Image 1: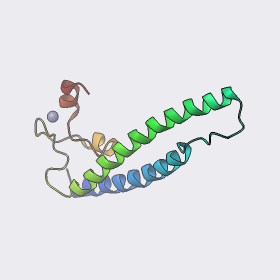
Image 2 (image 1 turned 120 degrees about the vertical axis):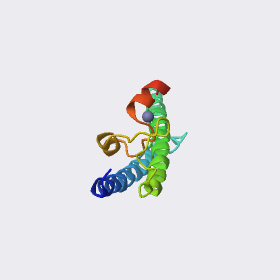
Image 3 (image 1 turned 60 degrees about the horizontal axis):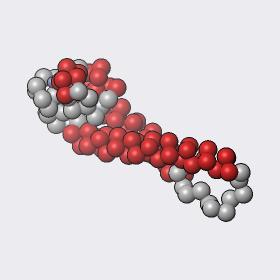
Image 4 (image 1 turned 90 degrees about the vertical axis):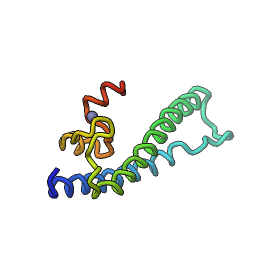
Length: 114
Ligand SMILES: [Zn+2]
């Protein structure tokens, strides 16, 4: 990986962290408990609960990704960044630009089954 590529990835991580933090705030707002006294019909209330569960799941996923990105930003300047944890080959730049938190190359990831 070149120095320029590393800088590009770093920028990407910073952008991703900012957007995911915004998303988390938004989802936290949406997952606030529904007031029991709210004068909604039963169906609307059930719909709201269903939607809330979807949002809670999304919130959980977003928090996991945020943690991974924060870990990636600490590692990005180190030599070990962008090296597959399994086969120690370089992870392709295109993949890191999409998922900067990647710790495995594509072939190892498919072998690991995720
Ligand atoms: Zn690998």
